[in-house]
Amino acid sequence: MINIASPIIGRKERKLIKEVLDSRILASGKYVAQFEQSFAKYSGAKFGIANANGTTSLHTALLMCGIKSGDKVVTTPFSFIATANSILFCGAKPIFADIDPKTFNINPVELEKMLKKERNVKAVLIVHLYGLPCDIDAILKLKKKYKFKLIEDSCQAHGAEFKKKKVGSFGDAAAFSFYATKNMMTGEGGITLTNDEKADKYGRQIINHGRVGHSTHTVLGYNYRLTNLAAAIGIAQLEQLENWIEKRIATAQKYNEAFKGLNFLHTPVVPKSCRHVFHQYTVRIAARERDRFMKYLAENGVGSGVYYSSVIYKQPFYKQLGYKSGVCKEAEKAVEEVVSLPVHPLLSKANIDKIIKVIKSYKK
Image (cartoon, rainbow, N blue to C red; front, side, top):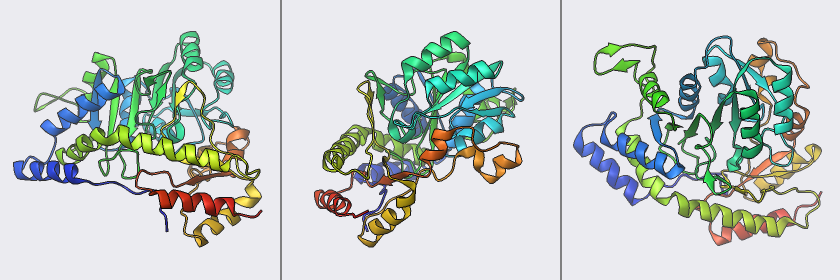
């Protein structure tokens, strides 16, 4: 079976892990600081706060932006549930705006509708889904007009670019995940980026029990710290990230070329302003055909996945909170049609050729 994802662990990762183990300083330390600085610089941000995972990174980003109980935060319903849950962690209310059916990202037109409908929106949490940047120009125009805080959920978009500027550097804060299947990983882990020195100082308190110094706690904080062990893996992975991204892009281009004549399959759209880093290579297929298509892939040794099979507000817990169906029709349609195919850097030429051959041989 050709897996949908395959984490890479090389010699540099093993070497740095051994260094950490030999140092006996396993919790936060110099490797964390080095990783924070390196990833922030790579992403074009001034400050980086490494922490436990992508979800804690989102929660930290929202708190750094002053999100509190009763605030309204507009986001997309077509994402992993952590995007909206992080808003709930702050005691705030997620408000969902529909997606662009071509990019799967939040639609600026639908976003403005919600900003007009809902008074006093404190923040907008956008998601660069599958590794494709949102329409940043349009969203920044809305930010200027409606005066909201902008948080970027970049958990799938390490190295993605809008007009040659990396995501994670446009908003008031941004969050990345280093989960094992991401474009680069630390096993579990995350980082929160910002260009605001005051927000950075507060964020460092948030992830470390609200501490100032060793024994003084001035705000409510959490134990969201990253370990030296995880950071060591991240240092090694970041060095290879650009090479891996290029492999993902090259594979996606091969798929696009091979599949362009298939009338049952819609390949990813990449606007000219964007560098898509293909955390997922996601196609669309008719809802009635999807299960049969995925079964066919599995029978022929090709892994696939559905990200995501439900909009967030139709999850059982969100129904309990009073959210209703039918709010975001494009997102509700997309969850019935999306299928992600293997695109990770460990795919061989033979793997790619097989995936293409299997898909081109599919009969509706």
